Amino acid sequence: MRIVLLLSSVLLLSACAQSGSSDMEPLASGNQLPQSSAINHMSQQIVNELVRQNDELRSNQPLLVATPVLLEDLKRTNAIGLQLQQGFISALHDNQFSLVDINVGDNIRVTPEGDFLLTRDWKQLPSGIAVEHVLVSTMSPNTLGVVVNSRIVNVTNNRVVSASQGSFSVKDLPGYLKYSEKVVSQEGLLYRDSSVGVQEVQVKGDTK
Image (tube, rainbow, N blue to C red; front, side, top):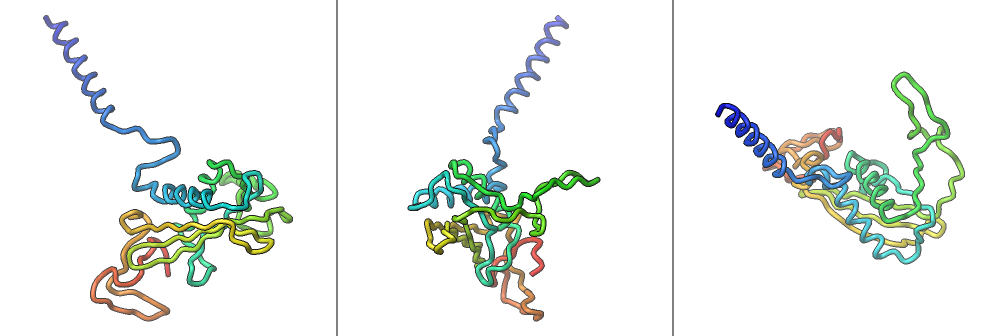
């Protein structure tokens, strides 16, 4: 009798464990939870539209993906732009495009902290890369989120080969975006608004 009760307990625990594990949905390869993968999902949507509208670029022609920049000055980026760039690279490669990574240095740097090949130091980058097409993107923040405009440009004649648009809201990217505070700083001056969210959204960690 004691043996029967022991076996019943073991079977019950096993069934509970299997039931608990079956409730968890498996993640798709390379993806995180939906909230965390919003940037990658948007990157894929934008690339799908670029592929649909493409009227010149062939998949075997080299393509470079530039870092998305803020529309207001075309000189700065942020955490969203950096992650978008990586998402574009992944999505374009998934569509069989021939990509060129401009951040690959000439030599591997072996240091006590690790072995590094990627770099943003232009002195360590190779010269004379033969690329005619570049994916460029701009980001335009507003009070609700960020609008992203992307286009593939032929740099030999500045012709736009394809174009696409997407947008993020604060709810889409709670780990990256937040609504503006009631008191905001602009060009060294403090401004007080009637409520939060009156000014354009802010990127978390951005010192601007």
